[in-house]
Image (cartoon, rainbow, N blue to C red; front, side):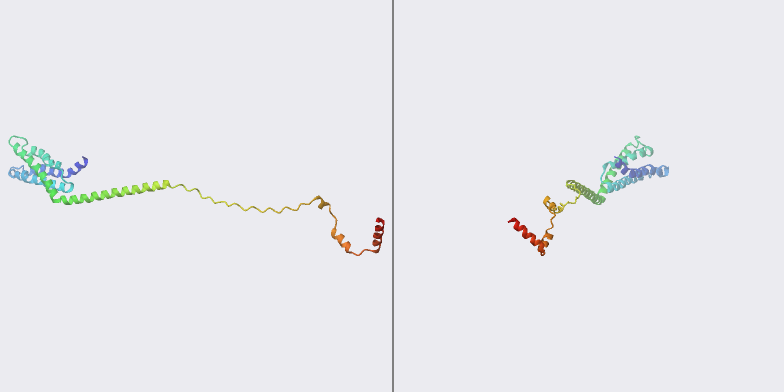
Amino acid sequence: MTDMVKKYVPYAVIILLVYMLLPLVFIPEAMQKFSPVAYDFVFPVIAIGCSAHYCSKYGLDFLFALIAPIIYLPSMLIYNGGFSSRTLSTNLILLVVYLVAGIFGLFLGDLAFGDKRRQKEKAEQEEAEEMLLEAKRREKKELENMTESSRKPEKAPHRQERRPSKPSRKPAPAPKRTVKDDDDDFDYDKYLSEIDRKQDPNESEIDDILNEYRH
């Protein structure tokens, strides 16, 4: 409703100014005989022109045709005798004329500028649809990316694999020394070397005596 009023306001102001100010020109007695020019020609032309221009921009809107008759009512009451019996029929006819002029202007504007307006509206609609589809595709892609990222398992932190260390080589066990080994302090090398030495004559005699004694 607010948008519609905003569309109507510029045209309503133009019609109001013309319908309220132009009759002032015909108030003097010398100009009164020319007043039909305003009511029968200028006012309908203004209604037709405003309706045609409005339709070229916004399309057919039959409510717009009511603007001219409604604005004429105060002008009729002030300048054209109102609803007096002398002017009532004339004013009612003028109201209908201005209504028809407004409707005619709408069809004229649609006929003259309708194709251009419809092409523009179609292009704007296609552009809006394309933007909507692009937004939907972008939203779908973002949703797929979010879904894919949520499905991926979280990677565990990389841990360096510890290889089993080689078993350290144990030192070879020291040879166990027995008690016999510890007590055996006999020097065999010395003994062998003494055997190899040449025996003294005294020693050989002693050996002979021992041998005889044993026998």
